[in-house]
Amino acid sequence: MDGIIVVNKPKGCTSHDVVNKVKWIVKEKVGHTGTLDPLATGVLPLLIGKGTLCSKYLINHDKEYQVSLKLGIATDTMDAEGKVLEEKEVDSSILEKSNVEKILSSFIGRQEQKPPMYSAIKVKGKKLYEYARRGEKVEVPKREIEIYNMELVGINKLNKEIEFKVSCSKGTYIRSLCTDIAKALGTIGYMSGLERLKVGEFTLKNSIVVNDSTDREVIEKNIITVEELFKDKGKIELDSKKLLLFLNGVKLSYENIDGVYRIYNLGKFIGLGVVKNKFLKRDIVL
Image 1 (spheres, helix red, strand yellow):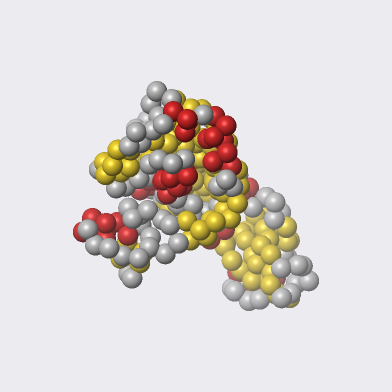
Image 2 (cartoon, helix red, strand yellow):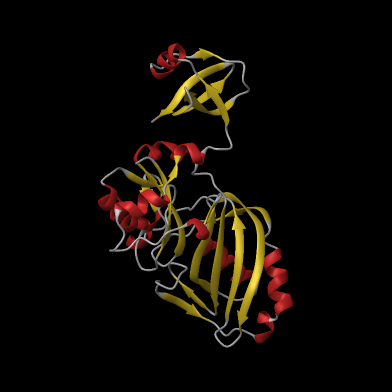
């Protein structure tokens, strides 16, 4: 079984928990293209079998989230699981729709973002959350991200909470974004809810729920094959002689423009090849 499935991750479990469950079901190698926090739900693409070799093509996908931001409280982890560090009164004027929409729209575009201390980013060989748990201070380098769109979904003035959708680039930390939005609104806050709606072309609509009743047949029925995954790429048909050379890692002279191609022999999908500087080289073979 080689390809990718899109799982709708439930709240309260880690991405690795889901990976392990699917691995136990299919008895194959399983990997992911990026984790979701235990509190988060939504789209979690999982690579199965030789589909894991495709991860390098999938890790740079843009993402879309629906986010809940609780105002007036700050936590050490920037989410609902953390220890409360500060509480602050939230003026009702802050939650006026026009004000919230203006602040959200101000975050659209390229910018530098400081990742949260409770994250797996490594600094000097250690993950940031390791420093945080030991109370050690370390300089956290900023990263360039891009926010493509922000859309206000709702405002709960009683609970001092706003809900919004955000489309963003790889590497965007929504917890940091929530903290920055709260600051721009003139207060403090933390991410109280997160649902990932989209990763690249993978959406909740083509996702499945994995639970104790899920079996291999369900996974097979919903798997997206490697061939289907790269359906928008060009196609190269190799005769048997060239196929043998290709499979043995020999570079073949090819006039196609540089890029990734689907490789076929007698109409059968073989895998992927890469053309660079007029040479075709084997990449992924199924």
